Image (cartoon, rainbow, N blue to C red; front, side, top):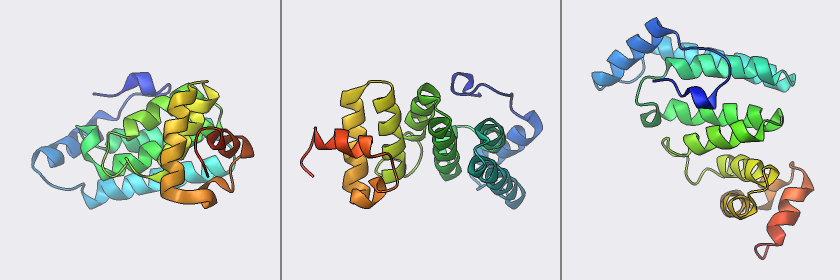
Amino acid sequence: MVFGWFRKDKKPTPARADEAASQAAAGLELTDEIHGEIKRLCAVGDQQAKRAEFGLALTSYWEAFDLVPEPKTDWDANTWILAAIGDANFLGHDFTAGRDNLSFAMRCPDAIGNPFLHLRLGQCQFELDALDRAADELTRAYMGGGLELFSVEEPKYLAFLKTRITI
């Protein structure tokens, strides 16, 4: 199953997805080949994102996502892939997609409590005027990452958070 409502670009690569799914069904970890390809695609996406080529970066990240077997929420790799996707969505000003992808990431291993994920999700919620949800996520980000996490972000997010909690 591909989460088409989270993405806008392409369909999965069935051969790779089937191979990864058979690995998961057998209770095995990702093969070195699949893990290496995921890392490669994400590195390509990271380079594209650094050049503000967010559409291209998303294509690379979604290709990596397609390699992760079902259920998608069982794999650590999906936590960081969806973090990259949500970050690219946010930086590309697609706050709805960012909210959706980062919310889905929260169902993956070790996502809840990750300050960066909470920060980006809170920022997307803020930009979508879901201020109570934004305050909740930004508070979680602050609790996990402190002021340092906010130091490289636009000041409006910390200013908003200060209206909701004592810092």
